[in-house]
Length: 146
Image 1 (cartoon, rainbow, N blue to C red):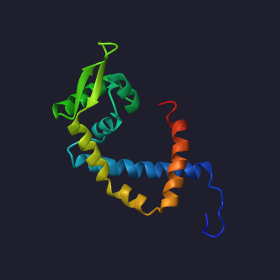
Image 2: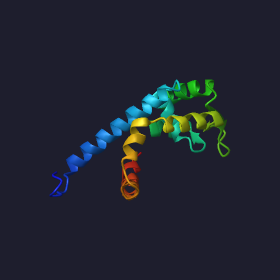
Image 3: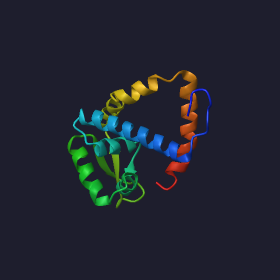
Image 4: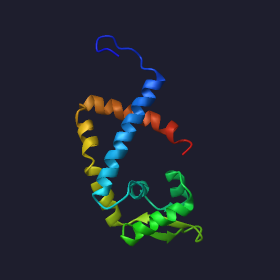
């Protein structure tokens, strides 16, 4: 696309751009997580815990087997970043809950994502608002099968 004649990008161009940005953001997230002794998957678990979440739901979000989640949660629990508690409506179900320490660590991971912050800092207020609105429109369609 030239700067003088805007043309509509193809769907493939949009997909490639989203993939490149997603990969770069994930790399930045993983690097920040490693500074706190976390794997990217452990940090992703912490990032998903806005409230109590059943182990099976975590497996679905991580696109992995529930048995894998057990080991990840075991390691986070050993560090005091999460705790397991029985679901109030079904005591057979174990919910994973971030501790205060876990919430603090994931907040710091997000704050330390320098490449992502740097890229977002290049946007003015109008561009930030536009990007937010566009991503918010895309999100439901992207997450509907997740």
